[in-house]
Image (cartoon, rainbow, N blue to C red; front, side):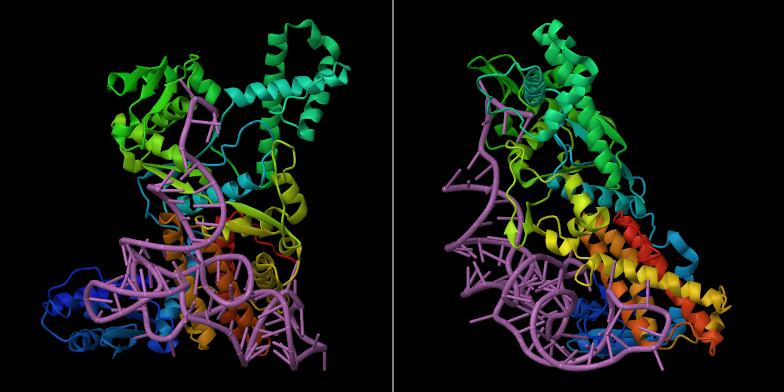
Length: 550
RNA sequence: GCGCCAAUAGCUCAGCUGGAUAGAGCAACGGAUUUCUAAUCCGUAGGUCAGGGGUUCAAGUCCCUUUUGGCGUGCCA
């Protein structure tokens, strides 16, 4: 918010000076604090065009700006940077704005009028959610919160593959365990069957409801019953895990339901009408290579069944039909082969390919005592989301997943996550929040009241760290916008960690509540209450609880 | 073979879309506790940003190339 004000001051200046310019310059916070509060490269970029040396141009601009209110100084440095310092009074005024904004601070209309659909997790409904879903869940849910905060109209969706081959196998797996309960054991255990304990549990559950009744059904009906039962139960299981994880979906989109509505046939006929299909070797093909894919793909197999690509095309058509401007798929890294097909089909159907955006979350290694925990779904050896929440808690898990940029591999150190100590960055942030809470309590006890909107009082805030805290808070709105637009929630976790750190330093160095200096205490309370609020906002964007007590 | 992602301190990672002397946390070492909650703070040490070339006032950041690692390239989902 402050950078944009400085930018517009610069633009006015350039106008006044009658210079030739574009608005492509930047206003940044220099790494080195000796270079001022903010700096700009505007003179470096526009020197040539105006036939001046960079430093000469910088000098002209700096002289004008320095005269303005709120600016303490504007100095030319290095090859032609202009470094600004603003007055404390300016920061005190900004602090008031932050305080008044309360929980609205950081909110903006940046993404106004843009409808976004965010699809994530979309795990198969054949078992409990695992750690891969844990990363996707933390990432997707936080991104949704962040994009909402800056004004996007966000809709979240979990796509349920409740039709097709995997579900057949699920039904058969339950059936095997069910028959085991009735001593009807197969000689051979099929290798493709799901072997996790949850299958046994589901079979037992079904058995306690139905007993041996299901043997009176035809095999087809019995399997149908098992499938239906298992799907419903696993859905409940997944939903409960996500509730514990503080992840919420606007919609669970069922593939089965889509199929019933005939969207598959619709998708196929659209492609056929567009002249994009042909028959070869008893299968129906999509000429995707003519639409940007590396080769053609099969749509209908020789056995008459559609490949998985068809429902996926159909599903994505619904995303376009529902009027979304930005369609974000959050996928694992093993899906990029898939996306080229999908893009080709959107292309063939003349749907705007640019609306479709794919985020690949890279792989996760779970580390235990420095060793990678090997996981295998087939053998039933998986670490579930529930396990993870039991072990480290939802807050810690979410933080760890969010704190890495999505494109990077992630090592999740279980030992570190379990530590309730200073090694764990989650507690560092929560502790800052809790400390401020207890300071407020202390102030109340000492009958020091928090005064509102009193500029004179805020003049007491003169320490460097106090001004730095205000500057840091002022960054928050642009951090949230950057996190939203780059689809990078880790910018928020990094930010809240830094802000918390600054507060801890402040706390260690200065006494905040002191009955001997009522006004100073009031000013400081005003400051830290704002800090507390910003920490709470940031944590909320990550779906992490801001605790009042540790 | 082709495609995608990565490579920054001993370890795990940031680096604000190209800015000035590359930053945190952990681990190591030295210090602070009759406190406003020490789950904290202060200090020391740690780097050829994988290698090479290019673009320009300026490159960890953009382009090319080599190397290393992960993944993909099904009439599986």
